[in-house]
Length: 245
Ligand code: FPP
Image 1: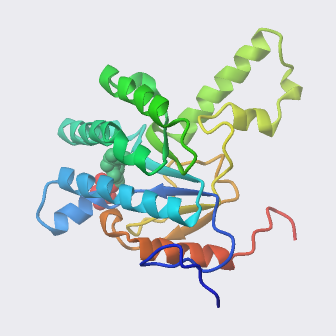
Image 2: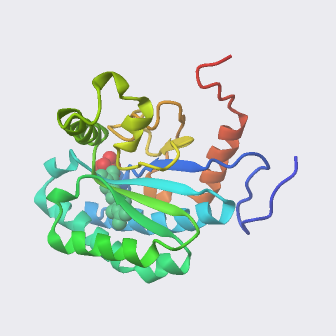
């Protein structure tokens, strides 16, 4: 088998590299617990790992990476943990030069209305600062939930129906896709969930209708570029039929 030497440490097998990868960054808490550290330390390690993985994705030709950072359900966690994640996110967005230096376009997907003014300001700034980059598009899913996103999209379409601009029978799948936070982006080819949990947890449910899924037992902070290369190699062996034969 031929290999691309695009990455010094972990090579990706020749074949189609997924255009869009989604990652559920799970297992931060368990990573910290194993080390006798507070959960926030796990989230910090997880946030750092996202930088490594994003850089790797950019280097092998992945065009979109969507990382699940905070779900609409994560508000149920203790305030201390929610605050720690929000602080990390703020820091992450403020490290924009690092990301911009890697030619990354940073977008946030999710319901921004519940986020602090400070975070909203940084989100606008990071978008403005990186939007003309030409490398990897990194979607950070923040206060994101697929069902919430669909409700939001349905309301946008319902409003158009109410205004008489659109007949219900004219609503298409494309219109639904275009009403989501990921409008204009291709659906994920591959969704990865580390940490041993085998579920999607309200992540990209519409967009992931035909995504290939890959699970690993490693907690997210320990998930390596080598494991990502393995996931991509597995993806390349899958036969994607999209409902056909
Ligand atoms: C799931 O692990 C992880 C989260 C709910 C938060 C993910 C957040 C980060 C990686 C840090 C912030 C992100 C960025 C982009 C700066 P868990 O806490 O459910 O782990 P457990 O299942 O082991 O308890």
